[in-house]
Length: 315
Image (cartoon, rainbow, N blue to C red; front, top):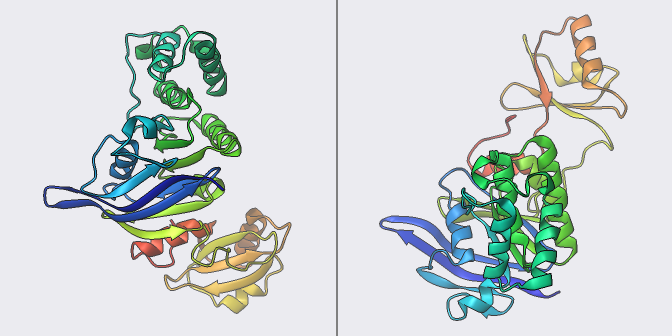
């Protein structure tokens, strides 16, 4: 596979604060990487460095073989970037703005018109193509920012919180768009606070903490596979007052297995075809003091929380 991005020993400091330290990373065509971490972890700094908006204190960034510091124009021609705040001009109409961005990328005449029409359709902007950018909702402004990043069919796409301001339907459309671009050979890095979104979309994750790499690898954890659970079962967290023994819950018909957790709750796996509502009714009917019932955190959530010193708890 062709290597799209190669990062070696990338670091950046702001005064006494180390915003990013010794980052190593590479992506090939079609890869999708989720960039995770709490606020202040270094995610935006990382993307700004990769986009050439910030110069590193040390390290090397190569995009499609071009060194970003030594050959910035050649490298930047291969990347599309949506920053945390979309780079919009509120007094321009959407169509005029995208035409302007296309000209900055060197597109002209028929190629320009075709590129603009394609991203307007791809990003669901047809109904607002003649509206002023300053009159658009936050969700539409976010989609316009994404459209400008896609105009020139970049080999590398950098997205800083692309789902911010999108409703659930728009978020689903965004995930589909990212998958389509990856299938066409684009490598994608996007930051997000939505662990479920990253879990289902990304081939790999990079978790930062205070500018350092806390974890880099598969979303399921170091082994690259999810923990063994009964096939097609539903996993739940349950808290009972007063507490009960796992064996008492495992004896209930809907329950395939029960395990006590350190925080006083229990992890249950239900038999396939059994719903949480059925379990809830049975617990109440049989006199268990049901105080809490919720879904089991997914594999990425457990990985993320454990990396920040939060032991096996529900989110």
